[in-house]
Length: 217
Image (cartoon, rainbow, N blue to C red):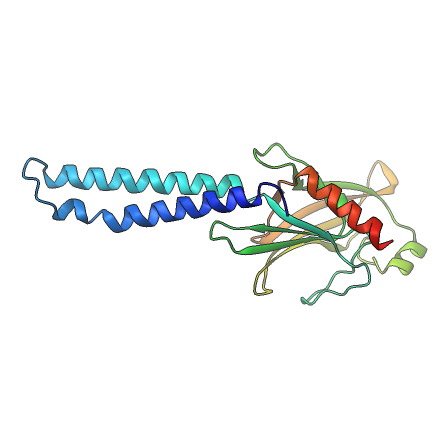
């Protein structure tokens, strides 16, 4: 588990609790006996309190959304339980994060080549919208099952799945030949649904994942 997982969990719980408390207590402002405070002022106070709490809750959710609480490598021999299954590559990984309501969202990245640095705050990686990779040979495609990686084909590179196993969104790449290099493929990504694109991966998760793989080998 990421070292800041509990911190983000507590922040979200506090923010949601505060928002719920302020929302439930706002009607009290209209009930209390205070002749010197007009109804318009009471409404303004209630609205200000709710908007401030709502904004802070949304900010906590935005900051914590990319944080990866756990990460593991997917078994290369696994097959996806979802429709339109994409063969896993040897380096496929699964990153688990939590939404604002603390529900797990698992993002399966079938080839880390689609991951790259990001400029988003509170994130270290993002799913790239433009990718350039070497074109695999025919023998390589036959041995790995990665027959989708060819010019003119579309390959699902990542999926986000909720805690019920429902696919929330996909990140697909349309492959074309590089006009400047016949040995390279150029991929243009498209998003369908609500796939998580940004990830905040702590260094300790990378280290623990590598140690786990070393023990297995």
